[in-house]
Amino acid sequence: MITQRGVIKLKKISLLLILLLISCSNVSYHAPSQNQISHFLKNRSGETSLLTKSFSNYTLVIFETDSNIGLHSLSSDPSNHLIISTSSTNKNDTITTLFNKVDSYMAIVINDPKLLKNSKSMSINFDNSKEIVQQIDPQQRAYLIDNIDKHTNSYILKFFDSNNKIIHEH
Image (cartoon, rainbow, N blue to C red; front, side):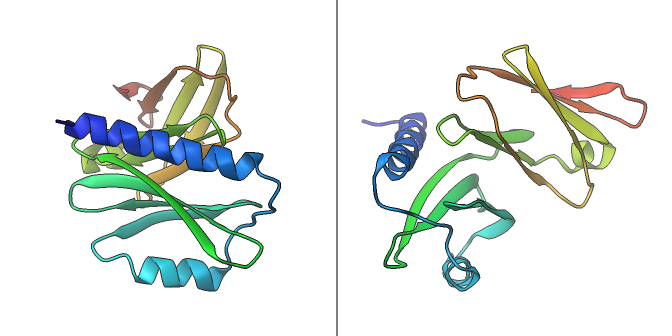
């Protein structure tokens, strides 16, 4: 019997494989049009879109349901057919992160309203070398950090208050 963690791992592996196939194929994929994105999001019952960001070859949508935080990766093939890949994880944590080394991005969602209210910035330290600092907007729960080194194996995520004191570490 496959556990919930096993299902989550399978979904993440599936997402990585699909993105790898897209990036390695000779077919030219591009980010979907705004109409394709709007139509896709309109038909996602029970999901709330937290953040949408387009790149040259795909668009990422961070979303939430009652129990999950997830990420849709959307791209279009040469015939403008929408290619969809989705991964999600349980949102019981204070912070939910989705990390993709293949396309070098990290999605961060702050689930704790108190942490969101009290945080002024966060820092992500990758493999104890590269550090990225992101200001926190108390009205924005989701963040997408891109251009992460594909060889990154670990990270430390810290949240700071207005006095630059660490108030949470993940």
